[in-house]
Image (cartoon, rainbow, N blue to C red; front, top):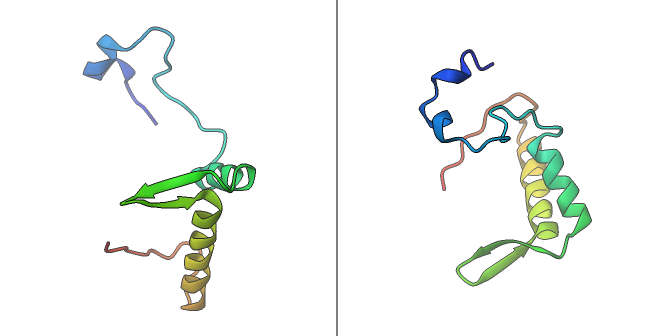
Length: 83
């Protein structure tokens, strides 16, 4: 919760009409799943000449989640990624 919006220095140059606080309607995973189902063939990532579509990225994320679940991870457990 934001206590005092007036104390942020950058608010002095904030564009009129732009809200200082935005409450999302959905979670990031919900937005991702929606776009992956809407345009699965659209490129989501481009890295060193390799393109990965939203459909492929969702599949990879689901496989990672299934693998972690298979290792005994459950909702609320913490995972660290070293890339």
